[in-house]
Picture (cartoon, rainbow, N blue to C red):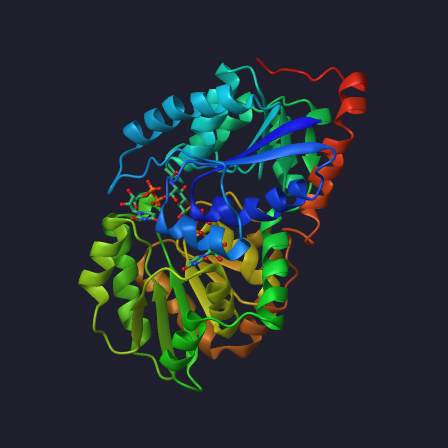
Length: 385
Ligand code: UD1
Ligand code: UDP
């Protein structure tokens, strides 16, 4: 029986790890699986846990209002030690590029525990963008033992960093597993008060533009320019903007200051995952700097304008499902305008194929973990250090 510890702390990690956690829990004969949340996020994490009906075994409870990266990293590292000592996992699973992932992986390395990295290999190779995520994921990649890469391109990035190819498994992104599973629940049984509220908020026959944003490198001037663009878009005929505003005070304060009480702009609280999926489905286009939304939206046929200057998701640009617009007011406005009123470029984007997965990523990860004993005998698990 292998002991698996899944660790995450923020909304996107929770969405992408929930189906994996639930898949491990179904294999009770082979794996003893426990969940540790760091609570780097609080309300936004609780929303996801309650939708997926997941109860953590450990909670590091680290979130502070307007937290900084120094204390966040130090608190996670200090507190995860006790979890490792209590549960003594054989494998720790971390996800992507957050400070939770990097600090838990570093702790697991100190404790001599094998590290499995989900959504491995994404790179911009620009250490300041996204900040601090690019370095978080590069550090995690250096110390991980197994790299579950969502795409072939991510695998190539890892190979170019001399990671042993035997330790890289291309799986697709678990976010598509989460999305498809949640869509099924939504279509079959799920109704909630948030969806009713959204339904009453939207004006029939208007094109809905869904907006999200939170990246640290966009905070300050970037968000000011984004808000200016949104004001101009809100003046276009027959459009309505819905913006669930991230709880980070460096985002929330400026967005409410610039956009509150503007006609055709609805600022609302972060939505639960099913309500957000419902809203994505209702939207015409999505403006975001989010990573996860770029991966989900193509499965729903929704064009995405990415308000960032760099991307670790070139597959989406190549597939034509997203356009990079940065944070320049004019570029955001003019690209949105042309998509809104040019039906041929809209239909090209909305029918492109999603390059991020087929909904079977968790199956591939579990299948690899089931065969790990044979695998480790056949291939000496190599270290890059
Ligand atoms: C974090 C991740 C980022 C990820 C994003 C997803 C790091 C450094 N950043 O950024 O990679 O893309 O989450 O959303 O790992 N807050 C609340 N309640 C919540 C969540 C946040 O009040 O449920 C507020 C708190 O004041 C908190 C602040 O937001 O201190 C910032 O949270 P933090 O996790 O440090 O940064 P994010 O911008 O959320
Ligand atoms: N999301 C959500 N509610 C919201 C906004 C986003 O559930 O109000 C989901 C979205 O579907 C995606 C994830 O949160 O799966 C993206 O999270 P975020 O943008 O915070 O982080 P990133 O993906 O940029 O790391």
